[in-house]
Image 1 (cartoon, rainbow, N blue to C red):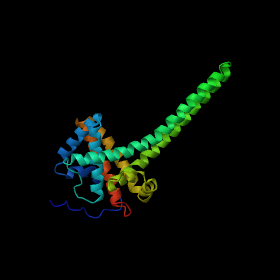
Image 2: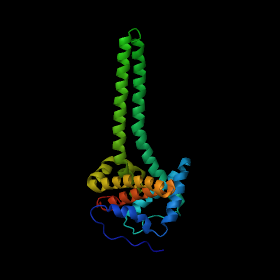
Image 3: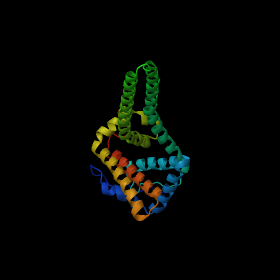
Image 4: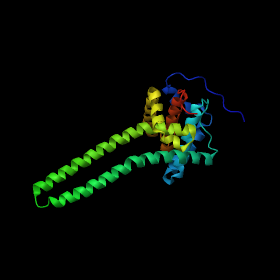
Length: 241
């Protein structure tokens, strides 16, 4: 079986219009989106999410390789499951790395706050002051957590893209190289993120206006995001292949 012909050399920046259209260039796009929608629906059992993420990861790699019709087939379910497990594991480790320290600090604040409350029981003013101090502490921690999560959400697609290209678990944690990938491709990387946000918005509108199932349309938006990240990697001469 011959491989699909390679696409022509890309322009320097992403073509957002192409990102929205590329799925429909595949003659089997309806079948692939419907199966993807089923996988998204099965996400409640976890295994569906692993298949969907594995498909997304393979799509990134095929787009980066310049394949003209990059949507993978839904045939190699075992391979897709392994790829999805790797990508989800990378994601989970990063999320845990942000949330666990926050939970430990919050627990420490609760313990210290409880001790201070005991000390301030004899004075109403002192008790109110300590309560206000604890409230400020929690707000500060929450603000730090929100900033950390926003930074992580910007960073993670780069880690997952490089993981998809190499299919090596350790690549996802090469922080310096992942940040360098973003810096080398800052415009196209930003366009890929914008493309995903627009696709997600259009997916919601499409569900309301066209009575299309939410899961296939959400899977389409995920594929659009994969295309954007893959095209970003395709334009990066230093990206791992």
